Amino acid sequence: MSEIKTIGVLTSGGDAPGMNAAIRAVVRTALYYGLNVKGILHGYNGLIEDNVIDMDLRSVSNIIQRGGTMLFTARCKAFQTEEGQQKAYETCVKHGIDALVVIGGDGSFRGCQAIAKKGIKCIGIPGTIDNDIACSDYTIGYDTALNTSIQMCDRLRDTARSHERCSVVEVMGRHAGHIAVSTAIANGAMAVLIPEKEFDLERDVINQIKKSLKIGKKNFLIVVAEGVGDAEGIAKIVQFATGIETRATILGHVQRGGSPTSRDRLIATLMGCKAVELLREGQYNRVVALHEYHIVSYEIEEALAMTKEIDPYFLHVADIVSI
Image 1: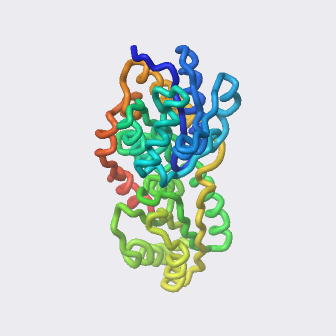
Image 2 (image 1 turned 30 degrees about the vertical axis):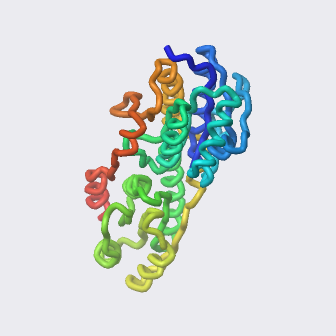
Image 3 (image 1 turned 135 degrees about the horizontal axis):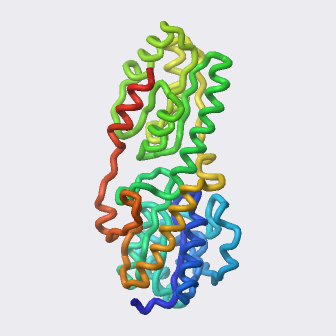
């Protein structure tokens, strides 16, 4: 067993539904094993600015069903500097923090690497709606965001059908099209445009709409990942080329909010518990992950070196069922 006595927990980067469930699991698991817990507010900024609070059982009561993060979150440019990292280390020493549990994405895990080099043990938990952490089959927040996207597209399909329109919907995913592809399949979209796959607007969208118009289809849904962008511009091109009224909708940050689904609550809780138990076992500087329905972990360097692609079968299915 390690000699860890106090664990700090923080959330970093974009918020994701289920982060609160992970925080709750970290705090209660640590307390179960007789450890002290410190909450760091506003991510790595909180370490630099010494914004640290004590946490107990009541600190995490009634949060498992809440979206967002009770510890707040931020992106911290100052932590990318040696000066910022040194201040963060000094805050850990001041509060007796032996180890950190960091809930976030790739950028957050690089922060783990930096603070680990100062001597603070770290565990990363993948929390991002984009589902783009390569070492893990699943990231906390993805299921909730996907369900939100699907529900919003259902509503847009209702009005598109009523007015016989085409709806171009931009979903989140700056560098990853997981939400876009899954939304397109689940909502019966005519086409999906993602950053990982080259596309031709004429061939993949306009010609497909024209073919469908000839066989009586009168309303359409096009899903665009944020990384492709310009939903408004795409809508104008589609309307000009096809003659069908076309509207663009950017779902934006509505996908980040809301009560987490059962899947996000469950996976977040399992990962939070695993993070603390890894530290107790003397395993640190690792990332917790879901692999083939098992909670596992990888060394941070190994995790960050992995790559994750869109499942080609998903793209295959999206093409087949879009007719």
